[in-house]
Amino acid sequence: MAKPCHGHGVPTTGHGRKEHRSYYHLNAPADLPGRGDWRELKTIGLAVRLYETNGEERSDVRFYISSLKRSAKTFARAVRNHWGIENTLHWSLDMTFREDENRTRGRRVAENLAWLRRLTLSLLKQHPGKQSLVMKRRMAGWSREFLMQVLTGNTS
Image (cartoon, rainbow, N blue to C red; front, side, top):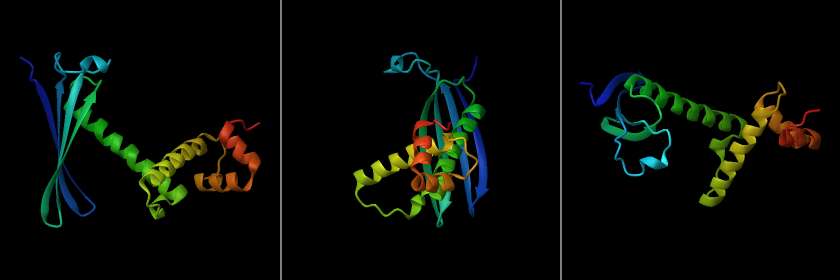
């Protein structure tokens, strides 16, 4: 009989801390409430991170729904790749817009500016020019013609 849940553990070290990540992956129950709302739902995953900060042990637990077949190793790779993409996005926003230096205090204003920066970053990345993202941002401020190329995607 097949095991109902796959597990995979990964000890990691980095940035001066030790962590242990555990991943659990199981088939989504047929009678799961709301399952019909998720067309390709096959599995449910649980990611647990145990780590130490300032001598204090802490944990972080995240739940995921997935269209993957049940495999804890594949699930672990997907979770790690997801956070790699998030971290890369944050780095791009900070380098292009100096986002970490933003001191906007109003929550709604800060959310709107963050949304605009992400949209702008996406448009700048789609522009075929070989310039860096920072240079493309500057050029869009200096030249109305270049700004229109970025906004419309029309470079001819």
